Length: 514
Image 1 (cartoon, one colour):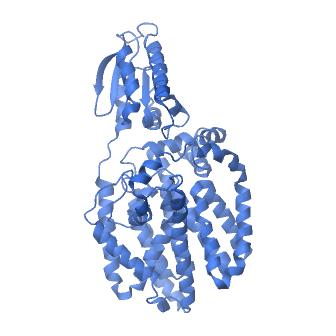
Image 2: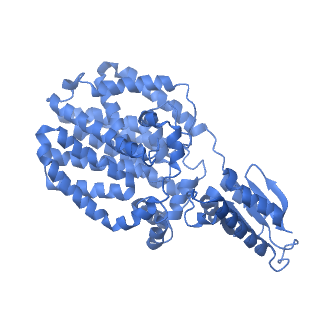
Image 3: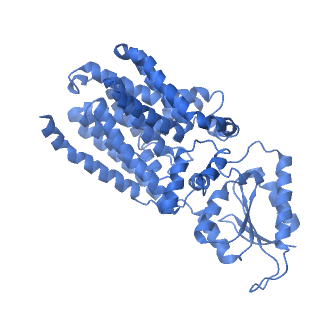
C-alpha cells in the first residue's frame, strides 16, 4: 500500500524540480553582477593562500570561497558560471527540504514544503545570487535532518553525518553557530529524548574542535564587519525584525530595499492573511491524527521545526541590541527551509481546502516573481567600463570611489580593459566590499591628497604616446552615492586637474592634468 502511494505522488517531485529549475535559470544573467557577487570573486582570489589573506579583512569563514575558487578555476568567472553554483545549491536545497519533511512527518508534507520553497521569491533570489546564503540554507537543513535521524535512531553514522554537515555549516557562515542550539533545546523539552542531551553536546564539542583552525582569524574579522548593518537594524525597527523576516519568507509581501526586487506590494495584506492562517493551522493540533499513527510524533516534529526556525532568529536578534548583526532577508535565510516545511504542513492539514491555500500561495508568489524578473536593474558598472574603454586609452588612470571597486575591476577583466585602477578611500584596496566607517575627515583628506598626487604624476608621464594626438593621460573619476566621502576628493580633482567631460548617468567624470 505504501509503495503504491509513493508511485502515485512521486511524479509531483519531478514536476516541482522542473518548476524550481526553470524559475532559477530564467533571466539568470540579465542583470550585471553587483557588489557582493563580485566581492565573492575577489575573495576567492587566485590561490587558497590569497583567499585566506583577503578573508582577514572580511567577516566570513572560508568554505564558500574555497568552492568558488575551485568552481571558477574549472568554469571561469562569467555571470553565468558564478551564479550557476548558487543554482545548484538552490536545487539541492529543494531536495533536502523534501528529504527532511519526509523524515519528520510524511511525503505529502515533504512535497508541499518543497513546492513552497520552489516558488518562494526569496529562495529564487538567493538561488540566482553568487553568494553563500543558499549554501547556508542547504547545510542548515541538511545538518538538522541528520540530527533528527540521530536522535530518532541513535546510530553513529547519523551522529557523524550531523557533525560533518554542521562543521560545513559553521565554515560557510558564522551565523551557522546560531542554528546548533535548536537541537539542544529540543532535547531539553523532549522528555523521552532528554537523555541524549549530553551526547549531542559531546558531538558538538567535536564541531568546535574542527573549527579551531579558523578561530585565530575571527577577532580581526569581527572588528569592522557588520558596522554597516546598524543603519538597517535601526530602520527596521528592531521590534519588527523577526516578523519582517517571516514576511520576507512569504510571497506577495514587501522586501527590504537592499534586495533587487524591492517594491511596495499592494498584495502584502493578502499575503499576511494567507501565510498567517496556514502557519497557525500548521502549529495547531487540527488534523494531526491524519498525518501519522501516533500524534505525539507529529507534535515532536512540529516542535523540532519551530525551534529550528526561531532559535537561529532569536539569538542574533537578542545580540543585535548590543551589536547590530540582524539583517532581515539576508543572514536569517538559513532558517527558511523550516518555514517552508511548516507552511507545507499547514497546506496538507487543510485537506480538501488545500485547493484554496495552494493556488493563493502560487498567485502571491507569481506576483512577486513577476516584479523580481521585470524590475529594471541598471548596469552602471558594466556600462561605465565599456564607456571608458571606448573613450579612453590604454594606461589611463581610473579612480574608483567607494563600493564600485570590485564590480569595476571585475568588468575590466571581462572587457580586457587595461587601465590603472586606484581606489578611494585607499583602505578599499584591502576590503573593497564595505566602507571603513571609522575613517575620520582628516584621514579622508589625506587619502584624497594621495590620490591627486598619483593622478597628477600619471597624467604628466612623458608627453604624447604613439597613436594618441593628445599629450598626457586621462584621469577618470568613478563616483558613487557616498555623500560627504566624495566631497574632499572631488574638490581636490577640480583644484588640480582640468575637467574634460562627464557621463552623469554612469557617474563617470573625465579629467586631464592642467
